[in-house]
Length: 240
Image 1 (cartoon, one colour):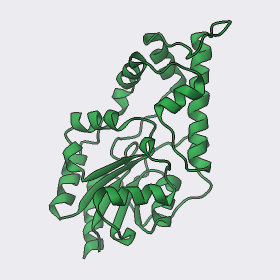
Image 2: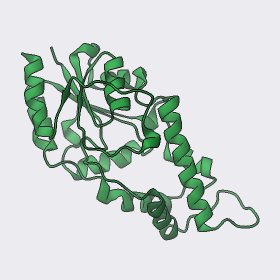
Image 3: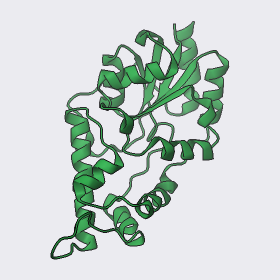
Image 4: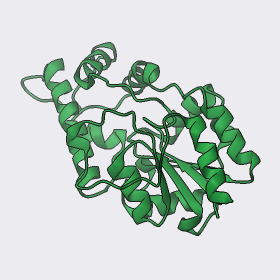
């Protein structure tokens, strides 16, 4: 029996892009006139502030990988000693936008799952806010196709912690993990994590996950799909 299908976001609903994080932060920092949160002497250079942001992001990913604890943009900036301003957030969102577009197949797939009476949810390891993600999903016409969404910037845990998956189940109103299917691109966070939580897991194998973000083990997916449209027949088979 399947009652719910839950999705990862980046690399799953949104195709994977390999991004030069340092260059992206440098552009954001320059455009938003980034500054240190507190006065210091000598005044840090843009390059020093960018390095601090990169180090804070890397530390956040390491905590997610090793401790499965979450981080927000405010946490990243605080760890880097950066003033979190509206200008910084706007520039960050603007320059990430080209890497956020939803897979064109998603609308059809999400609608077909809903037409089968299934609950549809989203669970993303992210430092971005719910508002940021919802602007993206609304832009691409898929926001209203989800019954619930969990962004780890809002909860204490990240995937693969079982509590992150339980939060996603709660968000869509399903209490039996064996009735849930999770779809993701990472064999540790998504596949291993979902299976450890009692779900079936479907792998979308197209992401070049950075080595420093790869966890200590991998799951063996219950199914592998090359396109999102391949998911519906898999779910139908499990529903039969």
